[in-house]
Length: 123
Image 1 (tube, one colour):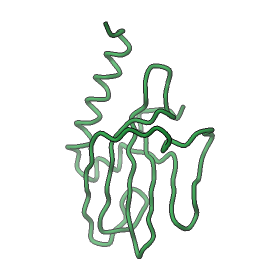
Image 2: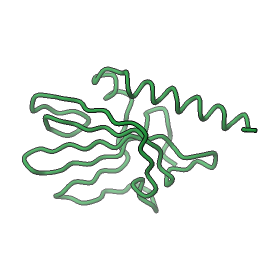
Image 3: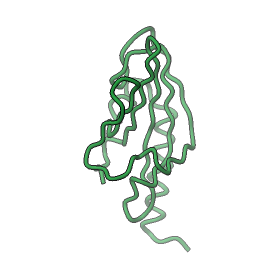
Image 4: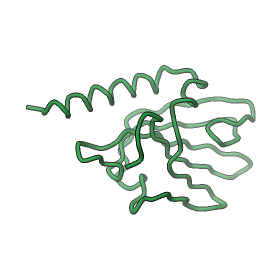
């Protein structure tokens, strides 16, 4: 049997997945906040983490946002691939934390950023 906390965490994760898949691009940009970025020119930028959110990342849904050479979630591109999943590195003691990995390419430079939902604290 699952604990109360596990049930609540699963319901929250399910709700976030629905929001991720159904929100407009504008709304999605409002509810995500970056926590780690990787790009071809600068490499990793890591806040207070000892382990990268890319370590133990488990994707569960993919979404593509199409723009016309515009900025979205801090990167300029035409195509943005957003991957919803959970990272073992962001474990809060009750389970893996939901996050979104954004991939975008502009003029040959790949931009990769990990976002958590704005209602979450970085652990």
